[in-house]
Length: 460
Image 1: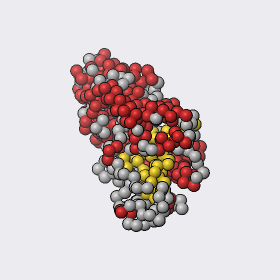
Image 2: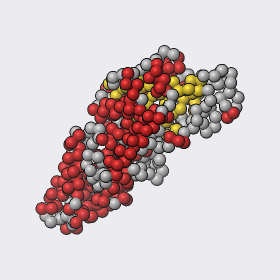
Image 3: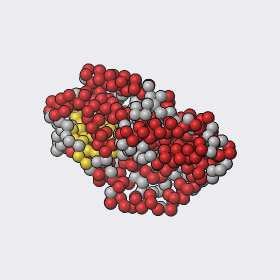
Image 4: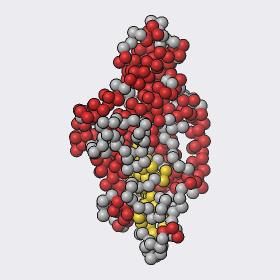
């Protein structure tokens, strides 16, 4: 669709210009620095020009996604206030270095930016992440959205009901309509489904909530990681760059660590507010090595609390079964002819994306940690910035055969009977294989027989 391509280019140019003026910290964050963890801004992981071609004789008839909200303001100002309080104390005592004296104005700017849109709310960058993703979805499925508009097929929109998720849904659907104005007439009003898209907080998952609150294995693992001497070393190094040695020596190890971790949290939040804060740059206040270590500490918490977790335990991700069931149910209804929906769009949170990624066996989420060998970057591929960055998304597309079922898929299909429906999955817009044991229609293909993935996930 030419109008979609033109608009995508225009929006990309506009955002690039905005972020180019926002500062160097934001530019560096685009390199997918793992130290930003799950606060990392979104970037699609595959170029539109490099997707596999749809097998001959198939046409898209349905798409569905599960998306995290886009970039947002920090949840509150607690970290900023903690950093400012110690800086003020040091300033009164003459205990700031030249670098340390430049930190407080940056922190105040960042806090003001968060307050300007409301703590926890979607930022301008986050809204654009969703609009751009929507436009690329249309461009990947050039015939589907025209058919949806022509047939009046409903586009269902579901959210967790949290403001940033609802705002993300609004931005995404605005992108769809910008690319294909006729879709305005088929978009359904967003509905809230907390059991589906905010399941980690619901009563049926009280066992998970108890795990977070007081599981001894979890507490021991996180305490052990925090107690690693490298935590104190990184904190001491950070403090001594910002405060004079005399003042730094008045701080306990616990105070130094609390300050450094709050500063690291602010640094991670800054790129998400690049537009509102004018490009506040906190990178200079943490060395890359120290930032990486504090990023690892945050990733460890995410891994054990929301990701693959401990070997032999499913408490962190089994609750995502309700979302996986819904993904399959929508495909099955469409294939059975009992659904008229053209698309189902869901907007949720990292607490849902991370468990779903583990349950699906997506790249980076397949390895658990032995309790005797804590999660580490050295031997586990899980990274928050890759598994669940801001606006992370999982998309399933359904294709229907338009040819005689006796024909083969293509030369690579080996002459096998033609499946009635094919499914392709994208993870952060990258063509992604289904878990081990699921067989694509041909070696290396991104397309799967619907019956095969149902068999592979034990649904047939």
